Image (cartoon, rainbow, N blue to C red; front, side, top):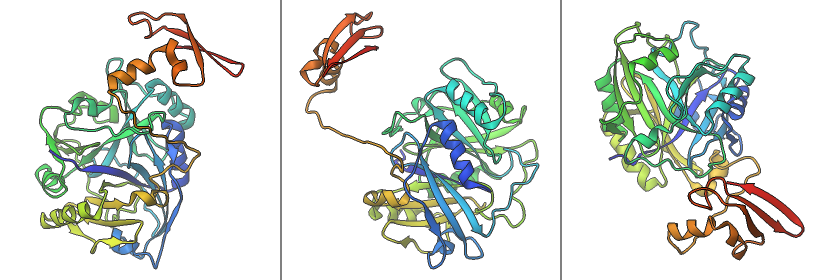
Length: 384
């Protein structure tokens, strides 16, 4: 079973700054720390394989997950070519990102408010609804009310910022040959095939304008992320435009993240020995060790070891005022939960005194319980 961790989805924007802000406000994400300018003498061309020598500004957003970011590229050289006007989600490439949201209705309201469009219709029952939208540059996003990882054994949601509004969970890829794509992402990259669950049914195709599509699919998983490979046998999927490079507008690629070079190096060896072509030898600049690899069908995957002490330079730490606090409690989860939910006894471990104004229902400390907290002349009433 795969323990591969997907640490990044990269987008190239015609106006990447505006695009990043749209994702931030619609999905309730946080800005990643810093900003990176890639230009010579940095080895960007060797890493990404873009010609001529690329120069770009890179910024990031963080979601609920640990060691994950949305990465936004603004290319100054060469300029990102715009998507074809008739581009569709069945056309070859990384073509739709799936985002699990904590508040489905609020997310749709934010989308409508910041897109000057009505909220889209949703599909599914309450608690498992989905809707599809396009961002300001035409990239498709599937908004999911239920975390798709909840249905798949062996995954780890990796939540460290639950107060944020979303977690990026999957990428849909339209491929010209399903068997070749599976070899790329399973045999070479190391993802695992999911055989007991489907991410989409034929009915979902209507959400992105392809009702009645005939497809073959293969669902893959890493530890925290799903990759859905789709081969369309209808709707005449188009290849990438002539002269396409990964710096062109749209989803660029996904990145596989490693904690140490000792994990990176054998994974890189596996990828290249199974037919993926690197743009060069891995580059190590201290902040990270990195290289992009490419399949025979032109799909790019970044392999990245971002060193955690330097995350503030690579955008994996928050760039906004943010507090993270961890405490080790030497007790069982049940014992800790009983103590935390003892509303009348909260004064034994905080500065507040507490009294229960109204018991909850089944159990008394549960839903509906009303308590009053007091300290230093301050009184707060809280309801569970």
